[in-house]
Image 1: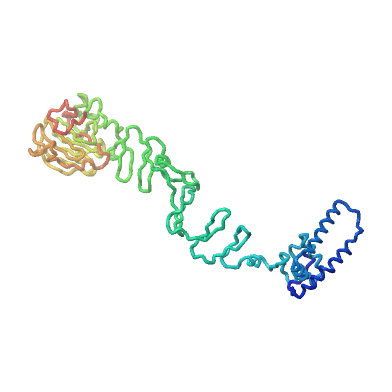
Image 2: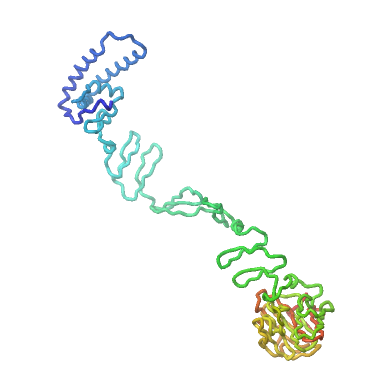
Length: 487
């Protein structure tokens, strides 16, 4: 069909040709049909009979076509090889839906023709901003004329035409939540917020890849850091990290910026046994057999007495158990005053050797030791290897066989000394029970930070010294508010 109409005339004066079209319709068309289809016809077959009936119906149809339609048909076939009749018949049979014009345009139907799709749409509406919407009576243009900026197109449901309406000035329209997110529209603004979740829960993703958020409990979050019994989570310099569980009987200590497990060592100067042995009362509280410097020291009387067999001036010995808090009382019985010093040692001074050298006198060599000498001076040192120590105070002197009493407030780092039942710190006004007159000894905790404290002494010759840490062994009365060193 397209190839048969290269010369159809697109512009013809309709009024001038109206009479010619009617003449053709009433005369030539009828005569052609009679001539082309005489009464003598081939043998009728069912298909031919059906075709004849269809053709007869088409002939009747084109005879009834509106005169204006015939005029259009005549206009279009003028100066072409087409007969108006053939064109009308083709239209009736549905074969002339698109006809190419000589100038390249196309006729899109019988009565109207457009050069392009834009022209077809403009025939419905050419108002800027319009939309095509199917109304009850057909497709129509929906114009924004009469609306104001910011209005929104609102659907009124099936069977009803949409309308332009003002956007809500207030209130929130909540969109159905999806993947933990809620979206809401307030006026022309859009807000995005997390959807509601149960209390004490956290939204997160622990799938190892992009994933919609899930709801977790705090315990589940912590399990991502560590899930082994005994682990501890703490904050180090770079972030939260896990400290693995310590070995049996270790204690947790802090150096101010990190945590660690400690079995107790003399400031790194000596290797010591498990911490459990220090804080647990031994079967025979007194001197600790494992913590004597000179191996020739003999312990007797259930470890209450220490007898050096060497005349070395550095016969170190420490008591047990260790204490780390509270107010405690203990007694030493002096053996000899030669190189003698009795007192307490913190973890930094709880040592029996320093490399391969001599430990020096108690309170003069190791950081963390506080020693009371027979001349009444109390000495301590804040750094290991000092050798001379610092004199903190001078109190009463003592002699061999004297009972020396010690009252120590570990938490306050205060200590009181006295000989026998004499004055505490050599002053009648001083009293451990009221906290008056105690000597402040922060040096006790130098060199280590675990807070453990032991009774300790240095015996200068072969004279026997004794350590009493049990209430039943005390020669003097324990101050009010204080307890025996060993329960």
